[in-house]
Image (cartoon, rainbow over all chains, first blue to last red; front, top):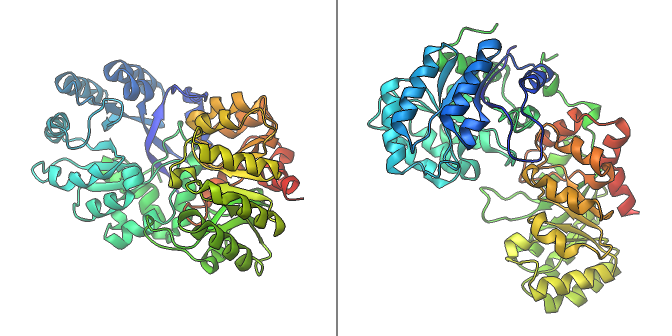
Length: 246
Length: 247
């Protein structure tokens, strides 16, 4: 059974770790049986979106098991819109990624609203870093943006209960639970809140985080085999219109 | 058999001692987990034994919580009692620590986050002085970058329960000069975090602490299983290092 990792990274991070090589992406994928990984460039997330996306374009051209997110900086919407088109035109990128911490913009900020509208028009899935109770704003923000589908990255972080209820109330929100701090019971809570298994996705935060952390969360969620198939790859193929890896 | 090797527990995930186990009400959590449920959760995991305490001592009444922990765990052979004192009432700590040592308790857990203590607070410093004078092993929450320097140079035996991979360099700088400083692997989540500790200061500085019942256990046992360290080092992290402290 294949695995698609919808939340991963490529490149080095400014911490005491050596995780920047494409070789490590692939080594970890092989270790855990991950077939396909959708990555954003760490440089684009933390420092320079356009520069980091350009570096990632080079990497993706040479590595068939990786796909890309173009990082969008909500403080530079016009530049990011043009860069998103450049990335999507390569055929190797499948969506956009927004971090909230590094650009210093919360989900409810005017800049984020403008960026969401741009992405709605572009019609690409968005992986959004979510961390905190403002994740609850997403259903309202998406109400006037009928094409935008959002992966709730980290499932709200410490606001995972708020994220679960947000996703339960909006069928264009998908939960993805990767996080170093693996609070117990997040997935059962989300399902009990009304999030269907069709809107749960598997992500790892690799290579910043070892994929076994997210795999452990999946193991402790005790999915049935059919549910596991949905979460580990089938939902991702449908969201991103990817070919089945089977 | 599943095609996913990670889906099935392996003997490489076996944990001899888990230093971070709690039970009882915790109002900011979505559900309370009592002792029976915690024991059941551990029983269904690769964890064999744990150091545990009632949440009563952490959040409400240290003396009563300690008494409850000792009484409750007397009937739980797989769990060893951990004591605590309230850092907001450090003047009450001395008799409580004496009671704990008289009961044979070797581990003292500090809740600086819940109790709002800083490294420079007089109450915190008083409790640490008393605990170290009695030879207690500290199970210490909070940021190692702030509390580590306050504990350095004193021969302290400390297990830091909240070390995050992002702050690993600070811990390693401390551990170079502090043989008694250890950290749990719980948040050492980068692909090379555990390996860096083992390679730079040695496996003796790591132990397993799951924070059951608040955290999933499998992410942590899988990290241990797949760590690129020797079998001897894995055994030390999984229990051998704590075994030395328990004796």
